[in-house]
Length: 156
Image (cartoon, rainbow, N blue to C red; front, side, top):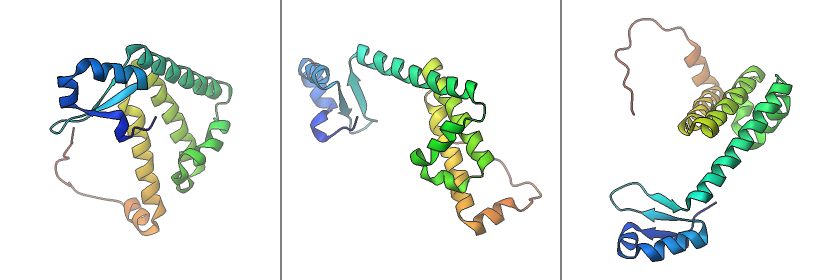
């Protein structure tokens, strides 16, 4: 669902008139609460969020069942370019690996409430496709390396 400005309220609005904001959220399904000094969040009814969780679980179970009956994930692999046009830069084996990894991550999101993993899988494979789309960059990335490149910085 896309959110327009009409579907957003400020944190101050929520503080001043919580009943009106809650009624609006119930009527619209959810409202975005914007906050000047913090990330925005959504106010939604618990039953609506639980329904969304059940929908995600059903979709992920369907994908897992498709893979169980077709280990090559042929139907899903065929659909991937429509969802992710950049997969054209991946090899067939990489496309299958991406598809399987994404389905597993979606299953984790549905069954374990681990939402970030699917976006990490997509970002990782998209980065691979981006490098492979530039022949010079891809050739550079494939060159052997040697030596110590120093400590790795990890951002959280």
